[in-house]
Length: 335
Image 1 (tube, rainbow, N blue to C red):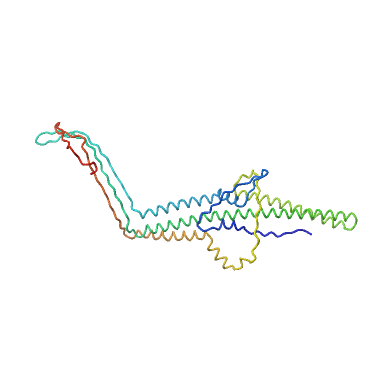
Image 2: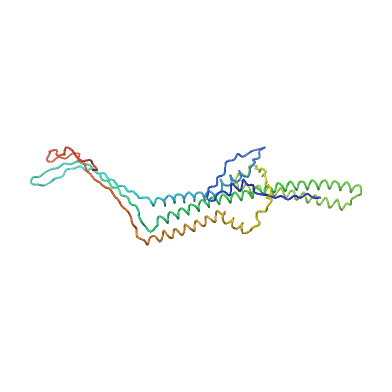
């Protein structure tokens, strides 16, 4: 008789906890030590997920987008604060001026001076444009965070599927090896029975064909295992010239109660837990706030403006017809 075995794979609970965390939260994968044994680098499932997330272009793009939306959110928040403008200048004057009064008078003057101005504007009302802009930026930031989380989640699921496929191929190879071993032993038995005349040559030829078929199935299973391992390594973007292998996965026992009987409950649960759907809802909400911000241009604006300025000059020297007329005391430069 041929050996057969049914393999049921259930996603480990630890993996589900790592890829189905709270929506909107950033997915962080812990650092694991890669084991090298006999020249072959052994990879575990968490290590594969970590490598794939670190090297994925989709994750890098989503992370950059999240950083940009975070900066835009801060910029939108700054619109509620009053602005402050400052200006200052400095002048230095020296020279000789001819004044014509009752008598000609020569005045020689050297002075320096400066001026300053501070102004601040606080918006009181602008048609709720700042409020709408802040809410729009907040929705975009949430959407970007959810998109980043979804990108990491998709990579985790994809790598997990590829990893378990390689693990399944390994189990199938073991089954085919057992089938081939049993076929060879059965062929030897039938060959011995044929020699003593208890079995016909037809039975022997039939068993030899079955043995050859098992050999072909084993070769195909090993080739499929190798191909699936290469596909997994391509997802991880590692050096394919380095020999890699995967560690075994501890499989959980199937639950006693089938959890997928209620289709409607599954649909509702999927709608609640899909981060990409929630990201699109936030983008739609952001667009609605953008419409409010655009409509604010039809409303009048009310600003509270305050300013402070001053200027002054200090005489370094001043003579009138050769007589020093600089006062003994002068006010401060910017008094």
